[in-house]
Amino acid sequence: EAQVTQNPRYLITVTGKKLTVTCSQNMNHEYMSWYRQDPGLGLRQIYYSMNVEVTDKGDVPEGYKVSRKEKRNFPLILESPSPNQTSLYFCASSVDPSGSHLRGYTFGSGTRLTVV
Amino acid sequence: EDQVTQSPEALRLQEGESSSLNCSYTVSGLRGLFWYRQDPGKGPEFLFTLYSAGEEKEKERLKATLTKKESFLHITAPKPEDSATYLCAVLGSNSGYALNFGKGTSLLVTP
Image (tube, rainbow over all chains, first blue to last red; front, side, top):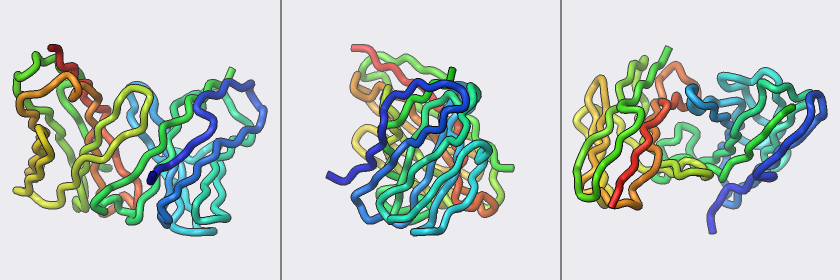
């Protein structure tokens, strides 16, 4: 089954403790992206990657890092998490970075992160 | 700056009661307008892409239309399984590859 898999689904952590949220896709998509979803703000892009070793900032990149060493994986790294990073995070991939492909973006099921 | 406004925020319909969701947008050079469906606890699921004014797309009970300022998602004879949050997003010529999402319309269809 074609899918984007995120782990973990839920995570509670303390301020300053480094964490990684993993994202993997099995569709051989070149384009991958991370979004966060907050009540009243909608979905906002954090980082994206056009291909292996090619990453760039989205609209809200502060406090986040990413890497793209393999085509299928695109982990999101929070080096020193803070409470304002408490959010619902989604990884997405697409064969076309504009999202205009017939199937658009494929999103993962989300990671709900709480930083206390 | 691209802006997307969806209305209403929430909509409650009886099964079979047709209605429309609105997505108003301002964008510099529209490259695409997208509709997604999001169920609780899940990621958004792609529905449609519209590229130019006058374009229409259909899928089962859903029909999306596009003008130069807004898009409508028409729901004909909805069923309870159509209950979800519907998200609209735009990609403008100055947006890079970041979709600009609206806040969504939460639809509840009751039997």
